[in-house]
Length: 318
Image 1 (cartoon, rainbow, N blue to C red):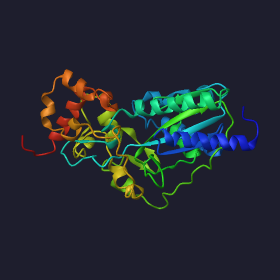
Image 2 (image 1 turned 90 degrees about the vertical axis):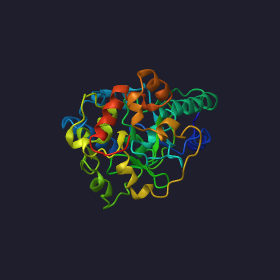
Image 3 (image 1 turned 120 degrees about the vertical axis):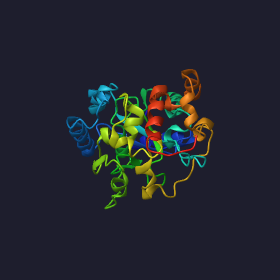
Image 4 (image 1 turned 30 degrees about the vertical axis):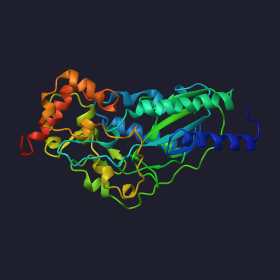
């Protein structure tokens, strides 16, 4: 049982320490229903959806994303964690480029396993606390709750940014039925910097913090099921076949980020050596290569579509 403020402080501190012990880079706690900024972020989501900036990503419309109470009954607190995926072996010098988040193991599984270990710890240390794990497949207003928990701020490129770890990390959450001591929500540190907005070749960042999905390279190479890629996207691909890191590569907060050189983030060999020969791979080869990665969301025919779209704009030797 957690009864006093001192006990809450102690268990809150221990919970975040446990998250770091399990391999997360950063951890923080938010109280439910959160500060007024959660309402502001929810309103921003509503505007984004009403403008159809989510394109075909209809799952973004889920009501639970707007109301955390619908996700887990009697929720009182949220543990927010970040898993750094930047690795010294990340390589996008090849003609065909894959976003860094997808070069290693499937982060959904990595994060879920680590959170489950934290859950086992909670069962021992706070036995009357129920918990629910959320990765980015859950309808949670993730970046808003991560910002509320103080682990970073939402940048103008819509990525969560940490002073120490930049934006090279993916998020995980545990919704808890215990009232814990929240961390201070993070303030934005983007200031007057607009480098990400200026650097996007398709002008997908239509205003600070707002991404128009149907102008985004990442959307068209990962999410879009259209048989062809629009001309405005095609002519700006510059090698991207799975995601896009441009708005993160140029971010000043990413210039001196520490690497996470573990086996979970180490790029797959086939990704490091991806070339146009992959157009000859059959579905079985694609399935074998994509196994254990988050990139299996991109179907073999989509990989071929993305590669062929790049070939239209490049003169390369075969």
